[in-house]
Image 1 (cartoon, rainbow, N blue to C red):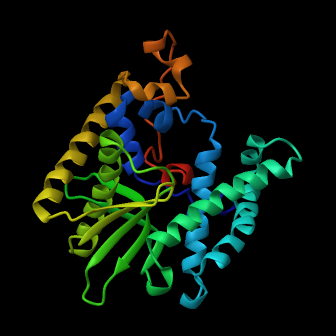
Image 2: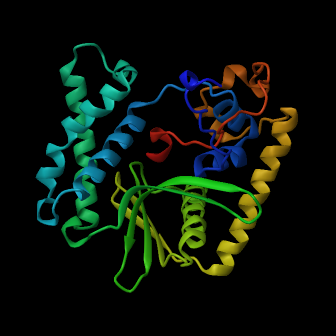
Length: 289
């Protein structure tokens, strides 16, 4: 390689994220479409709103504690949307061209979610260690786990609380299990990184102003770690052959890929082979569900 060619590109190890692990558990073919084929999916306004609210809350906690009040949070909405839409201009296609009223109504719905957040807690009384924290670790088994924690609170005594904002309503049994799967994933990563089992896993549902808190223990995290290792081994096995089978369920009604799914008379694209460098990456939309 000549100097003009520059250094070789950094290749990230394939990893497992909460969203991709949940995809495989729900439907291996959905995992393939998202992580291997990388097929595009059209975001919804609700997903974009979740991404926006997450961005505003991150910016809010970057302010001095005394400034973390509802009016200040709402002032951050339009600038945050300008930043997001500049990075992903295609997101503006969800709104009618030059329809300021439609965008204004959508921003108003995001403002209501912020009101709900302030009813759940007072951010002036909190000083998180980190917001939108990237966490990554390779387990002894060789499985690499990767994800983003919405907020990490650490008490002076060293106790850890993992906080995740959900911009939908508090879920029923299936949705609750999926949400807690994500939180246990983060708990395993933080436990292995820091040697401390998180004291609390907290989900904050901003549409209906409810919170769900859970306290894991080390034995439970060990079992969950083995679950993640088994999921990854199943993914690798499928990845060698391309045998990612559909798993029809009630959730199919929300899937963008029915036209390609054999369960609905479709044909998947030709299998491109196991992806490199990284089939485990999450998007901002994944993290804002």
